[in-house]
Image 1 (cartoon, rainbow, N blue to C red):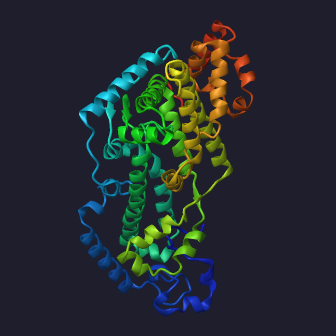
Image 2: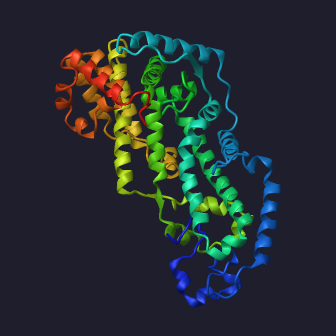
Image 3: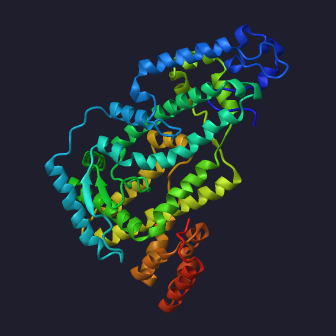
Length: 449
C-alpha cells in the first residue's frame, strides 16, 4: 500500500506534473522529493515544522503531551477532555449509594434461584459519569490501542526512502499528533457514553474492575422516566442485570479473555482506505496541520478511518457477535427467571433495552470508528430463545454447565436452529461430564484464547 493515514502520503493525483510543480512543493507532504523529483529533502521546511510543533506543545501544556507511555493514543488527554465535556456533576449521595447496594443485594438473592453461578461481585459501587470514565479507561486502552497502532504504523511503513533518512523527529511528531487526535476523539466519545451508560457491563463488555458491580444512579433515574416505570423497580432490574453479568464473567474464567481478545483480533486486522483520507486532506497544508491539530480531528470526525472488512475479519466479527449475543441472551433469561414473578415490568424493560442496543447512538457510532466495529449482539433474541429452551428442557444446571468450556458453546448455526442444539446437550449428565473431561484433558494447563 502506497498510502498512509492522516492525509500524509502520495495520492494518484501526484502523477500530474503541474501538481508536482506547485508552489513550495504542494501535494508533496513535508517537502520530501521522491526519486527523480526536483527539490529533494527540504531541511528548512523540516526545521520550521519542528519549531512550530514545539511551540504548539508549549501552548497546549503538559497534559496534552502524552502520558509517557508507548501507547499510540494520548489517554491523559482523552481523560482530561472527557471530564471537561462531562462538566461538573453532582457527587453520588450517601442515599443513592445505599440504594445501589440494597438493589444489588436484593437482586443477588433473587438470582440465586435462577442460576447455579453464585454471586460474582465482591463489592457494589454507585458511579457518577466522571467515575465511570476513570473506572473503565484501562479497558478502553485495550480496545482502542490496536486500531491506533495500525494507523500509526501506516505512516512509518509508507514514508519514501529518502524521507526515512531525515524524518526521524518528524515520525515522532506525527505519532504524538496522532495520539492527541485519537485522544480527543476518545475523550468526546467517553464523555457522551458516560451520560448514557447504566452499568459497567451495559454494552456487553466487562469494562470495569474485576469483581465490582457498578451502577450509575443518574442514568438509571433518567431511564426510568423515559420508559415511565417506577424508579425503584427499574433500579432493581438494572442492578440484577449487572449482578448477572458479574456472575457470568467471574465464574466462567475464559469468557472475559475471550471477549476482549476477539475484539483485539478484529482490530488488528483493520485495513484503512487511505485514499479517502487523502481526499479529505487534499486542501490542508501540512504546515497548517502542525500548527492547528484540529485539522487532524476534522479528518477523523468525517469517518475517514472507516475500516475495510476482510473475509478473516468477517469471521471474527461473527464469532464476536455470537458470543455477545450468548452473553446478553443468558443474562436476559436469568434475570427474567429470577425477577419475572416479582417485578411485573421485567418483560417490558427487557424489550426496551433490546431495542436500545439495536438502535445504538452517537457515542456507539463513534466507537464503531475508533474500535472498528459495533459492539452489538445482533442475534440477541435468538440467543435468549436458545437459553430459555435449554432451561425449560434440560434445567438450569445443564444450561449453565455449557459455559464450562468454549467448545461446548452454541455457534451461529445453533442460534438459527436451537432445537437441534438443545436435543444433543445434556441428554445424560454422565455423557456431558465425560465430554467436558475430555476437552479439559486435551488442553492441560491452557486457558482458551
